[in-house]
Length: 165
Image 1 (cartoon, one colour):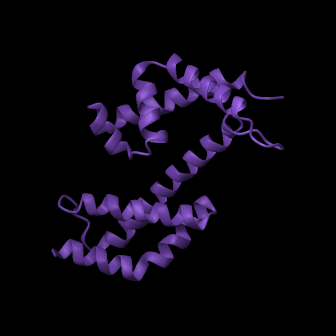
Image 2 (spheres, rainbow, N blue to C red):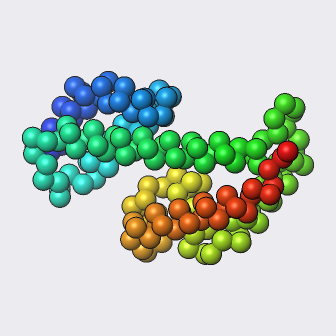
């Protein structure tokens, strides 16, 4: 095991509880906070050969945790915003409603430009990181970010009319 791996292992052992508390301040849910911390460690581990942070590794890791927590929060907000399309509140979920809601969402996704649709599906349905989605799409991370942002904005407009009263 290299020095960076040893340092990360030690940081995980000593800083994990504090990092989960930090992430919990963003997402307000313990399991989601743990996911954000794990994702941050994975992100740092994947970059271990190119990182040059030295003694500032704990600070760098905190920034990564905050960024991951923000991503979790954004995904939660998008999911909450469109939850009504996937479930029927106040009664047993009717299979017909589910099929219709999926059809509405499928049609809205199909109305997006191909790159936006692909980015949204990879990020929010396949739950890939921005880097992983970029690799799959053969584009840069910035393209994935902008495609998701524009796609979510367009979906918001398309689905606004479909919300129940």
